[in-house]
Image (cartoon, rainbow, N blue to C red):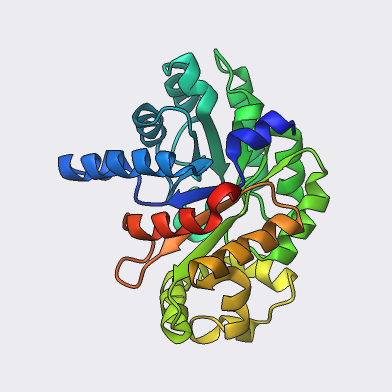
Length: 296
């Protein structure tokens, strides 16, 4: 990966599942536009549209911003045919295409009726993107990779990897698997709350769904956690390894640990007690931008 690529992503980005204009009413669309404009002005390097976005969601955020990198985090290959995705990207202007990164993932068996042979399905999807007219540049796509095979694929067929719900230990292992040149951009969930008991409750609310998905639990077991760590919404050991809990300075410290472990970029997902990751926590985004300062 070149220094220009690192510069395009920045060190710190924002990951949000609330940036889906396709699911919003007129007021919601206006709020999203205001939010992404502010995030760009705050200096974040990349906006990650979370929660299985569509190509239209990505195009809308690109159109609402000027220069920031916009990435899907993560577009499900089962929901959007490769030919349709390539055609939608092709309709963007040259500058917009240059700022859009297509984050791709195989989702999860319990969530996808047609789920089968996920690795082979991803290879076939990448082949289809390569053979589209025009093709989707491998340098403008990343894969939601957790295990060694998908990480190797991310290094060989994409710009790199965007792992979700991972520890710093996984980040170090992923860097080794990817090699030195591929992008590594893990997501890190954040609860800005100095009451740790309350912060852990918020984190457990978000974590509950993911502890039902084998892709994540199997990965955590590989990293040395036990089945007992998944009980009662997650052990303190598990929560402290997966989340940044506390004030903005604590978040800055935790993000730095991922960067030190080999990440090029960390995508922060802010969780709130009232909305989880579903809202637009603009006050929290501002507080984090102030804490990171020039590190963004």
